[in-house]
Length: 357
Image 1 (tube, rainbow, N blue to C red):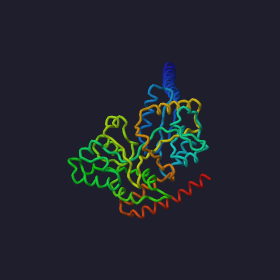
Image 2 (image 1 turned 180 degrees about the vertical axis):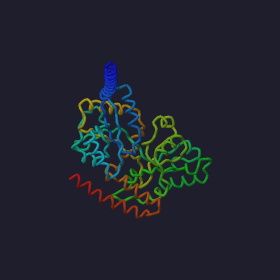
Image 3 (image 1 turned 135 degrees about the horizontal axis):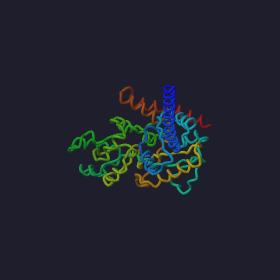
Image 4 (image 1 turned 30 degrees about the horizontal axis):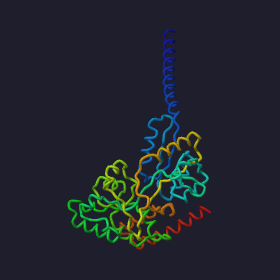
């Protein structure tokens, strides 16, 4: 009998022990559930600027978490965003411009941000928020340029620019020949903004496309560290602190193709979805306000031109990248690249017009 009671007591003890353990886990889960998640959808190629600002913003807040979902910026981009918004409750998402806004119009929530007029960009009656500005052009290290006794006035046209590059390559004075000029592998903003009409690529791009195209993030970092003389690309991946430390030695010139005299600007635009509670919406607007007050890379306003990339088919980047890979692998020539771009442009432009009607 004693043995029976001993076994029964042991069983009860073990059951009680398990119960206590379960309660501890439940308490922990309950604490985590107090934090609601704000899901933000961004293209895969984005810099980590937004994530950095989100980390700063929520540093002393324990009631919510940001979650950033990166999706490929390809022909399935809109489908990916729809999946995140409709089925996974995304609260904010990136839009390329008018075409995206019209496509997602039924999902977009208006917001009251009248005091931030410069950051609010409207497409018809729909609002988007400018989280950042990216400058595209020919970035030059002035210290290195002076070292080679080259004046800025000597780089006034595309032909002059190419002559200067070749001249310095012949007598690089310790600078690696490969570091005289680095060209970004993301040339979409330039291609669709300079001499681009009805899907036609300007002939002057043939020479630019012939250069080795490299990962923009790596080039941007090396340029800011003074290792590169000319960098053709965007400020998207510039580290702000490094930029400010070297700002006096950095200048952005227009890319001189098609008589261009302006620096192109690409905006990072975001819309709110209708998935937000009033409190989530309040937090997001506080976050956007925080971003608007944050220090960012800025260039002179009088020399800027809005990129036409937002007016191109939303998969233009993907199309151009695919054709450039073929060109580099000698599978096609520049003439065929132009024909393929125009053909694809016309097809997808019609598809977008049909989806908007």
